[in-house]
Image (cartoon, rainbow, N blue to C red; front, side):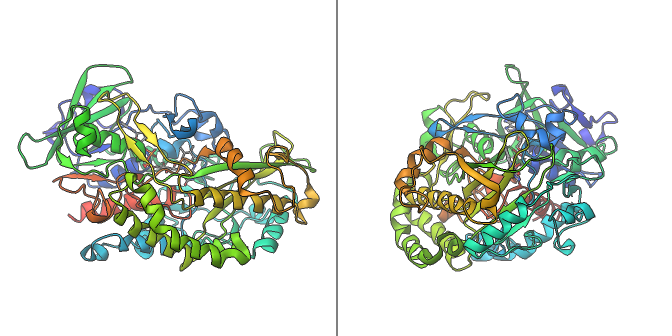
Length: 592
Ligand SMILES: Cc1cc2nc3c(=O)[nH]c(=O)nc-3n(C[C@H](O)[C@H](O)[C@H](O)COP(=O)(O)OP(=O)(O)OC[C@H]3O[C@@H](n4cnc5c(N)ncnc54)[C@H](O)[C@@H]3O)c2cc1C
């Protein structure tokens, strides 16, 4: 019994023997955003032993990790999972302690209240009291958060915030950069977008109503040189030397779960390998539960290797089915990130950084055509569900999910498009990164072999519902208009990317959807917001986990990472995911 051992290993270790053949109360698979948040909370009880197994290394002292401004260096590096995906693109994810929270863009936002409430509608009536709604999840998002209001200088340069909309005593530091951008371009962006869409400028969009244009904070720590506040720095670093019941094993790839050799569907351990190439298989044993936190791409892959998934896929690879759950890896939802840039007419200081975002809803994006577009959405759900059913449980199940998504868009007026204003100091451009927030296209993750180091097939089916392409083109047209509208136009010269040669605009309406289509499909990147591959939904809708995040049919197996989110919310992911991990920790502690 590891608890009675005076030499129970704790802290961060790279030695597989520290976990091999030991028994832990909980094993968390993946030491990323949700994995470390969950383990941090579970290990608060000194009588509970927790093992986290992380494939990547401990890179907390690497400037590519702690300096958010340098996070671009992560792409394609040893810290990046770099999954090949459809359209010849790459899916990115952090392969390091803290997972993607250690390498991401650090933008801190939350979705619209109605979107979280809609998750409850996808559960059984009996599970609706579990609190998968805005008010309950918001309390957990706040529990994770240590907000630092903007400084005087931040305020001078446009930042604002409503402190009561944030948590102030949690582990994840959230604040504004030390130096923000000087000049009038940000206020020009706000004025121009307000004038052409009617979107309001709000003080803070983290209170459940993100349908506005606002400066947003980042997961950085003003008390630590404005360095990144990842899940590793926030949940692990402060306690790693004192919490003797928590071991985090790095450089160790989980291969598969070990099932009890009876029919009880009980997980008794986890098999893992050291580094990226070894063939020695180690095993750690679990007393209570295993919680999957390997992210939206690798969690379904590990489950499939463990016999949890679609029997047709599993048997084709010689894997016996332990749990027949055909939607493991399905319902994958990912967004399409599109850069549009213009030459700018002003100078910029080096290294300032401001995060100014706009989240228009359908009416603000489409203007007078919005009513017709809403009707088009409603009347198309049946055919879209038919076209995407291979990546869901069935057409009927997907149609129900789409109806909920359409309600959120049309009835609740949730933002449908995100625009980030970018001014770069290294090149004389300004412009935007933008994406469709709530795509209808659905994809899948499927293992190709039983090799633990082989990357799965990730097919997002980007743009496979033509409406997703149309909306991305509509957004691009709006951006052309925006940069040609005063006062932003006074700071802008010619369009740089794509440019009128690549996407012509003969009648001055921003260009046709047909003209944008091929360029968008060549220029976009995968937006690193993948989710849904082990969705928390009723089984008849294609859910993989229930409202307690338990894998259907398994005795002691849960999932806490982004794969449980059944639909996108109009936001970046982090705050929501910390909330999910915090909530699950409380459920487990309460014996739920
Ligand atoms: C480039 C990029 C930019 C982003 N920008 C933002 C942003 O600005 N704001 C925002 O809110 N969100 C952003 N996100 C999204 C956000 O970071 C992720 O959604 C979030 O981190 C997902 O949390 P997770 O726990 O599901 O997975 P992760 O945080 O990715 O953690 C999964 C962990 O599991 C490990 N793992 C995987 N397979 C195995 C295995 N077989 N064995 C052991 N360990 C394994 C991984 O190495 C990783 O550490 C970004 C993501 C990326 C990739």
